[in-house]
Length: 336
Ligand SMILES: [Zn+2]
Image (spheres, rainbow, N blue to C red):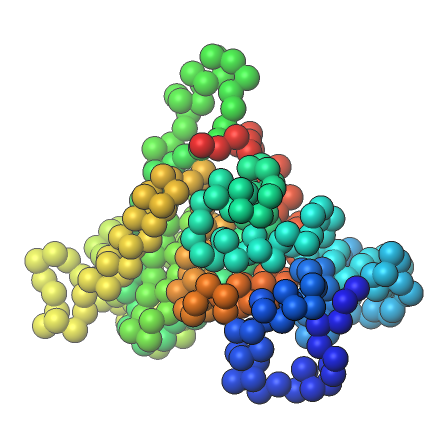
């Protein structure tokens, strides 16, 4: 494995500003060193703890090298694992192409264009995109709301894009059974925090909204929402201040839903026009891509590449999450 930084204690002691500069230059640095994403994982494990993939214990010891890669062993359950186990680059073939794949992805290129530019197949391009997006899911925990929070229900088209039907009967049955819409909760505050969350079901329930509020908002915040029943039913024990905004009555201009509506329509345009819709089972992956883009990827393509690599590398469960999602239903890799 290649060393990306010479002095690790200096690397670990970087200030926020130095860290930002390091990530902005990471792509060029890795190109110069001919380092790949697995090498970067070797550096990243110093700051993201190497938890045991089986029992999640942190009683981990180094256990020699295997094919030049650091091995670890769990002192609690004995499981042996590598620096890449569970991460988005676990069992990755053609790892030397992943860094440029990330560059193409953050530049907004299509699956096909990414595949062509880095020299991989279309199904691999799809798999890589979703391995990266699976790694972004844990960033949902980093998003919290304060003060006045505008919330709305967003009904998005249900889609099984990419699904292959075994026969005409299966297609007929699927058409009959499939729901038309899926419910997404959209929330934004006046500090610019933004999150969408897909919930199970055709529309939001007050329990789902309460669960979201409990996790994301202080009790003394103000929930500002439409007059849909589910929002009206949210309990005062969860949130003290509720402002229900109707079309006719906007309370002296303080409470409105215009920001959340604007952000929601920007998001749905991105999904429907850029991707021409996405399969519902992958919707939360795309949601976090959108949210992370707005929060962390605000620079030029080259600096965004370093930032995206760093974000994706900090998650140690991405591969498992990716597998679970892929196996979830019948949607296949056959898209476009
Ligand atoms: Zn263990």
